[in-house]
Length: 151
Image 1 (cartoon, rainbow, N blue to C red):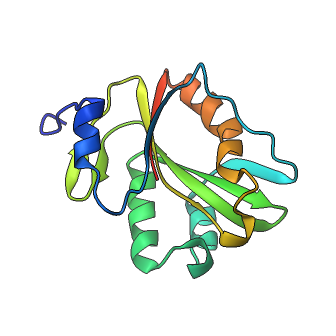
Image 2: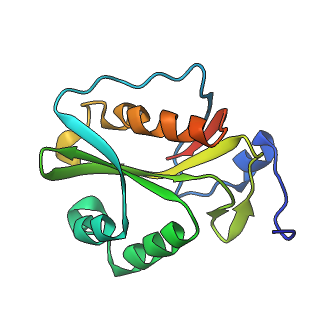
Image 3: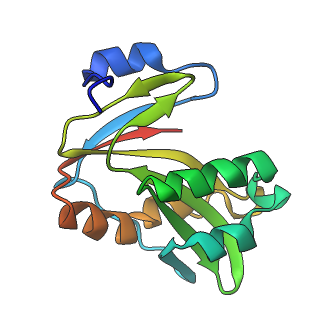
């Protein structure tokens, strides 16, 4: 872990590449989860990741392999479902995050939310803001007080 350097918010903004369209920061005390009717959220396991790793959810074989590696590294996949139909996900890292061949290590009380995706037909329903019903308790359990979100 010594090869990774903690970076400030300003340094992170300079690291972000063309694949990241938005960069946000927020405190866990001020964030509130959106109420989304009919959508359920849960932390997914390896089997669930394999089951939903489809083109519809913007996953190919390479992304699945990477996702399984991220799970092995302790990162969490928060899935959103409309009944039995998966409609979105977000990854949460409590440690080092890779950004275009560079690494970002947030402070110990900061988590990174990244690779957020909602299927086109479910967009506009506040699926991602609703995921904080699962993300916030998980973050607080680990002493997280701030999020950096890469979209």
